Length: 72
Image 1: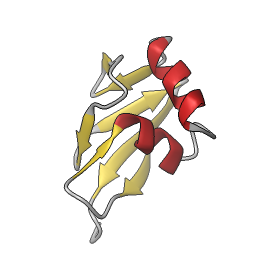
Image 2: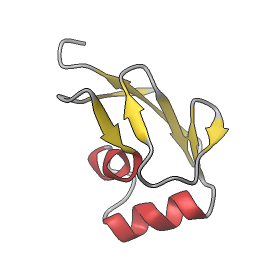
Image 3: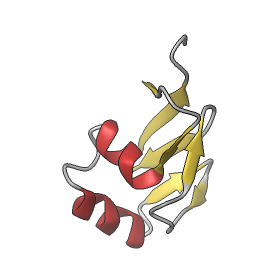
């Protein structure tokens, strides 16, 4: 599992996918989400604007990421 640090209280799921390098563009993130390839805390999420917070785990195509704060 790879830790991804954010500097805000939350990050939208589509923005997280770009930050983590999973999606190259917002359009690519949208496709991944709508095709149900993204899990948030082990549940399929189809909401592009889902607010992800510190402690959430995102899995895409077998790759897992954990959202951590600045000081982690």
